[in-house]
Length: 420
Ligand code: EPZ
Image (cartoon, rainbow, N blue to C red; front, side):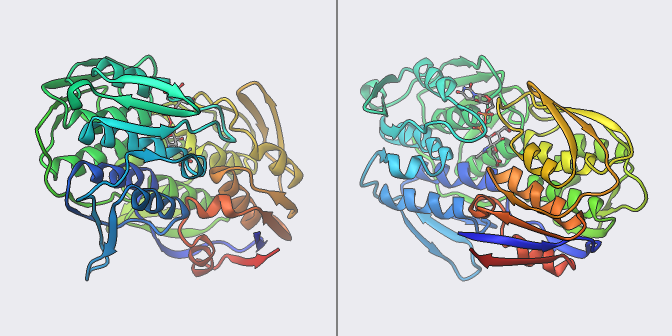
C-alpha cells in the first residue's frame, strides 16, 4: 500500500487546475446508459472511482473510448446485462446510481445492495421508495435489489423524499426522464452536481425544470439522444486546496473553481480571516496572520458541505480561539479527529459535535487515512505541521483527488508518494 510523506512548513504558492467534479461525473456516466448509442463526456477526472465506474459500465456491455480532444465516448448501444454485481458495488456505493438509468431504459434492473461504508450505514430506502412511487416493483433477494417496471416502463408520478438525499434525487431524476408522463420530485437535494446532471440529461433531450431547487419536474420522453456534456469543476477539490492554502499561509489561484458553488464555504472562510476572491476564471486564496475560530454546522446545499467538514476542522485546529463543528448529514464522520489529535490538535467530540480549541502548532506524525475526505484533511494538516507526516492507506485519497501529490508539489508542497 502507498503512503504520502509530507514535510510541513512551506506556504503553498502558485496555481492549481481544478479537475472535473467526481460527484457530478459519476451520475453523469450512469446517465449515459439512458441512450442506446455513443455519448460524449468531457472533463472527466482521472480517479479510481471513475475507473471503477468504467468497469461497471463495461460489465453492462458499454463501450468506452477517447476521442481526438480527449473527451470520453461512452456507447451503450447494446446492454448485455442489467445487473450491477456485488464485487463492483461494494467498491463504490455510488454504483447504485445505475439503478435509475437501467430501470428507466429497460424496465428491469438488478443491483447489489451497497452495504455501509466508513462514514455511515448510508441506506438507499429513499431511492427504492421513489421507484415504487413510479410504479416499479422492488424485491430484495440475496443481497440484491430487483426492480421491475410493469409493462416495461415506469409511470410518471409524485415523489416526496422523507429526507434530502443527493443520490436519491439523482437516481429518480434519471429514471423519470424515460417514464410515461410527468414526474414531480419534492424535497430534492439542491447540490450544484444535480444541476450539472440535469444539464447533461437536457443535452440528451430530457425535459427537466426546477433542478437546483427542492421541486424538480420531469416530462418523460420515449427515447433520449446522445449526451454531449462537459463536467463541472470539483467544488470539493477546490475547497480542499482552499483550506490547504489558508493553513500554510499561502497564496494560490484555483484555476477553474466556481465561486457560486462555494457560497457557504466562502462565508466561513471570510469569517476565519481567509481572503478568497474571483480572479480570471478561478478563485485566488491567500492568507497570512492568525485564523479566527468559526462555528460550522454541515447541512445539505446551500448549507456548509459535509464533504468539507474535515478540511475546515484542520483549519480551525490552528485558529486563535475555540469553536464547534457539528456534522448533521452523516452519523460517523469524525474519524479524522483522533488522527489530528495525534498531530497535536486539541479536539473533543460529543455525539455529532466536535469542540475544537486552536493550538499554536501541529506536529508531524504517522497517521491513518480512513475515508476520502478525512485523508485529504491529514495531508493538509501535514503541510502545515512542524516536521514530517506520513499518511498511510492513501488508496482512500486516490478515489477522489486527481494526482494530489503532483498538484501540491507544483505549489511548493513537499509531498512524496512512497510504497510501503
Ligand atoms: C453524495 O452521497 C456524495 N457522493 C457524498 O460525497 C456527499 O457527502 C453526500 O452526497 C452529501 O452531500 C456522491 O455524490 C457520489 P445522500 P449520497 O444520499 O448521495 C441518508 C464524497 O466524499 N440517506 O445525500 O450517498 C444518508 O445515510 C462523498 O465525495 C438515507 O437515509 O448522500 C446520509 O446520512 C461522501 N436514505 C444522508 O441521507 C437514503 O435513501 C445524505 O445522504 C439516502 C440517503
